Amino acid sequence: MTDANATILERAAETAARATPAPVAKRVRALSDRAVAWLFIAPTMVLLLAINIFPLIWAIQLSFTNYRANRPNEPVRNVGLQNYERILTDSDTWLAMQATAHFVFWTIVLQTLIGFSLAYLIDRKFRGHAFWTTVILVPMMLSPAVVGNFWRFLYEPQIGLFTYIVSFFSGIPPSDIAMLSSVKLAPWAIIIVDTWMWTPYVMLICLAGLRSIPDYIYEAAEVDRASPWRQFWSITLPMALPFIMLAVLFRGIENFKMFDMVNLLTGGGPGSTTEVASITLKREAFEKWRTGFSSAFAIILFVAVFGLANIYVKVLNKVKSR
Amino acid sequence: MSAAAHSVIEPSAASKRVAGAIVILYAVITMIPLFWIIATSFKTPPDSIAYPPKVVFTPSIEGYCNLFTTRTRQTAEYIQSLPPATNFCDETTRKRNMVIAGPSNFLPRFINSLVIAFGSTFCAVLLGTLTAYGFSRFKVPLADDLLFFILSTRMMPPIAVAIPIYLMYRELGLSDTALGMILLYTAVNVSLAVWLLKGFIDEIPREYEEAAMIDGYSRLQAFRKVVLPQATTGIAATAIFCLIFAWNEYAFAALLTSGTAQTAPPFIPTIIGEGGQDWPAVAAGTTIFLVPILVFTILLRKQLLRGITFGAVRK
Image 1 (tube, chains in turn cyan, yellow):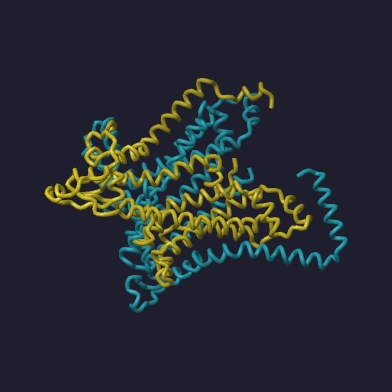
Image 2 (cartoon, helix red, strand yellow):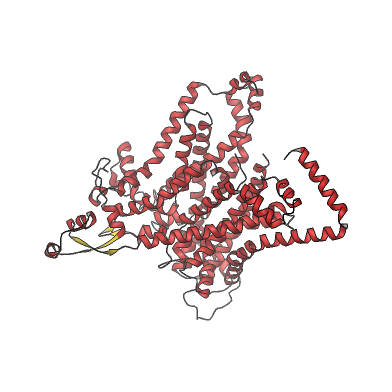
């Protein structure tokens, strides 16, 4: 919109304001706008209250009881904070937390390293970089469950393609590479699939970060004869950092609650070596039917994710201002 | 900026070549699993489990036959007594001493996926557009807190949400119904829709509507006739993101549906043949399931960044 139009608008508004008595005009306008705002926002809020907040309150209430969803007619006893106490002192939940931490830590490390390197290379703008970027992005769009299920086939000890390629290059007999049933390898099997799927995500956000750095900063650095190494550490990395943080936080949140891919690949096994928090929660809630106990566990996860989401939105706003 | 200044920071030809080679190598490696899914869907069951894995093989659509049918084992005499096979699927099945017993559950599950994904996308985009407009144009009290609340609902662990939802749906009779799943996916997707569309609507200058309103349009008319046409690209991109989420979703579907409303993701892993997973059929189901997503990824490639950062990063 041009300045000329804006002044016309202002003038029109002035004339209108003069023509109508001020309080009346204000009331009619404010009322209708407020009504529209309510009309537009309320349905979403009602839906979220019904599908998210009401069940959440129900879960909080259940978390203080010994309710079991498979025995709805049994008397429900209030157990106070017992469920929470048990979770925080139970060695099984700590094992689940350790498995989750191992998974989150290594996926973030690998995805950030590979993702940032790829973004850095793509930012060299070689011929055809746009096409290859799209190709690399494909895995992250796919269903983690359906693809995770297919990786089971790639990991098969005798016939799997992954096993075959690894044994071809390492010389280890393929029958010894049991990615999903060995206690030592299974945690890495899920890390590999997650890294394959989500490195593109980190790459795409890092690429945006690298492209947000204005050229003139590098030009100034060239004039000052800063070495490429120096330019990388004092311009590229610090300026891309909020974007890297954004990607890391989001991957952290997503992998902290990881369920679908792991459930189909290992189901938490062998034993409970890959039993990440969400798998434990599913076993407690939908296999052992300890609804009260699992509600308490769910609330603890909620609080953790809520805290992380808060930090995420802060970084998001920081990136937005760029 | 002058051409000379630009050349200072332009990467050298050699560094471009090396960068290109590494990126292409990564892209090719990352495509192997996908290539393998598609290749396996065209193998016969014995070819699919051959060692070493067969890269060259005679293509067959047996996997697709098995995906859409259920089969029963029969005696050779019984098969001999049948009238001659009328199509390829009949023929291959009989060669394995089996006959087709009927259609499998794949098609109904696939249709469930379509109904639930499109239904929830429509609702989420409708609610999302209205709410995004509300937040974009009006002074809403506590707007930042409400927006954070909306986003945080999307980040909640699905299993944790599923526990009370399971109980609630059991009370309301919504367990294992398409309506229940549409409501749930709408609630999850509406947060993304609001955030994404708010970004798109913020970019449409307010002056357009204000001019229209001075011309005598009401607020609602201005929204319908001025803002909506301007936001079409944003609405389309948002719809595709919602569609992809609902299409791919597994956790809620696996826990809250079991029969009539089950979608494809929890169904595909359960496809089994005699003595274990029927990998060509699983691969065929996976391929059919993935093709729409591949098309959408290509359509969306310019908007992807926006979609995965809830509209915060635009370029």
